[in-house]
Image 1 (cartoon, helix red, strand yellow):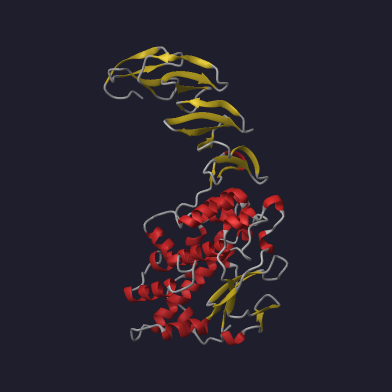
Image 2 (spheres, rainbow, N blue to C red):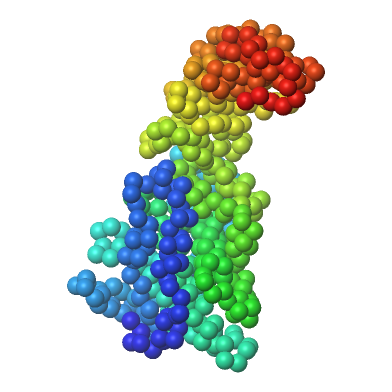
Length: 438
């Protein structure tokens, strides 16, 4: 749309489709849990029009080819809150559901320049999602901040790519793009850390594509140019460099978790976000995990206790009062849970109705095979069935007993020798082996 004035910037030698394909796998777990089936992320992202504009075009309407419609070019400035968000104040303000956080009165605004912006105007619009990139500002920044002669064009190209992937990352994190709506109390309007996190992730994703995942890495001088640019941006944007370094170190940035938080957001998760935000641990936002059957996930509250909810109803099945860990639902419809005690752990199973089918009172449990499992209670081994009935009394004379496999369980006696018992507790292979018998 800039009438071909900046071809050397956006006609990069890199393949942008490759970067979008890379982004498409970053939200795979979120999509599998929350979105409709068979979502093609690359296609959705590729369908978002990108307008290359100049600052002087602000508020102009420009025609869109093949659409028989026009779009208005926004201003190249953004108004951001300058007051820090206090999540404790926000949480307390929700007492009695009297206060919607989106009705909070901001203390002040700061005007920030934009190099690019991702806009969503609602599904009723002919082009609901669009990206604008201000080419003159990218060129000016490269001209004014390049110390090495002859590198201006290359730096402008890389800055353009960074801005493009940054805005595409916002699209990637737009949960409504996949037909999923944020929870009522999740809002960017006045709540500072949400925008902070989103911008940090957007820059982290863009940097990972730009610096580490393309066929030809940047020269050290160009990489330093990008690093200086990112670190001199505002809060959130600059923390994108920390996220990029976590990705380089092969640390999961938990983008799926961030997207899921938007959908599940409530008081308890607000407190989880508070703890995570105050700790600034970008690799430790872990508040939900898939637990298998029928769209069930486990969610952690602010006490770091877990409960299991079902989707899409978000009905609590069990937990939030005591469980410290959990496993997936098995083919029997049972999920192992754990309580952390001062001197060890206790295990049990909950069913799909959230009831403790096996009380959380065992030192250890294995998965059920043909309706029975080895269990350890008060330091002694035995076996129980799925109704918590004793199958083998808890007086097996062994130091260790492993799980049943094909009706057999390996056992170790006091001398450290291994043998095998059957499902009645009868020793069918004497304890004479130095190695475990499978």
